[in-house]
Amino acid sequence: MILMKNIIKLLAVALSFLPLTIAAQVGQHRNDLSVGVNGGYVLSNVGFDPKVAQDYHGGITGGMSIRYICEKYFNTICSIYGEVNYASIGWKEDIQTNTGGQVVNANGVAEAYSRTINYVQIPVFAHLAWGKERKGWNFFFQAGPQIGLYLSESTSKNYDSPNLASDGTGRSNTTVAQENMPVEKKFDYGIAAGLGAEWSNPRLGHFLLEARYYYGLGNIYGNTKKDFFGKSNHGNIVIKATYLFDISKTK
Image 1: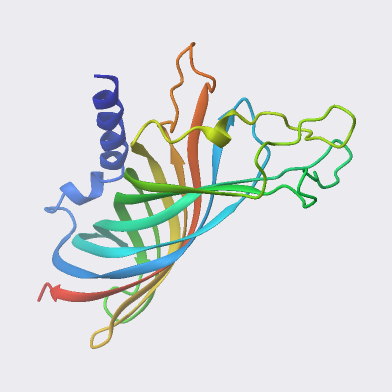
Image 2: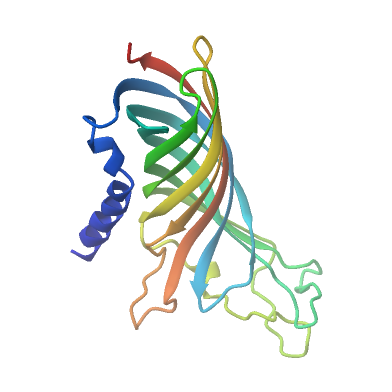
């Protein structure tokens, strides 16, 4: 029931960006459908509470895109944009001593740990653009809900047990429970928003470049009083390029 309420809230956020698209009698109707592919790079982390010191985890994302332009309202081009993507996200720990030095374990090398979690991600956006519609440049803002379906995970580390010594050679951040905990919650959901630019050509199609941020509203671990973490949500910074070609156009 709580999950359904959160999904309804996400859809409400997306719909809140669409008041212009449902007033076709005021704007200029469009019936433009485009499909294509996208790909990019993701910098990700997990918002743990208790805190886990982290650097950004780097991974790839890519998949299929679809866009339906339904109206031009004054100077605003209004559309619905969606994707089905594979994404490799997770977290990478920043393991340091209290003095900012490297933590060396029994094997004699600096400790390093990262977790990669693979998802199918499905964002659905209200897409608002300003500029040239068919030929030339426009700039756009898009926002809406996103869900993620867990596929798999893998861990990379170079030690058997973390060095938590209290003599100054151990970790300044001693939260390590997450290192041996597999993902518990396989369904992820949250809000994403992005800014970008698009170049269109009637014969070549549409080329989009975008910077996007995703904030997870769900957690990868349980967050009840009996669980270790009170929060463990994803955060993603995405740089993405997209190519779309037209299936249908308004005459």
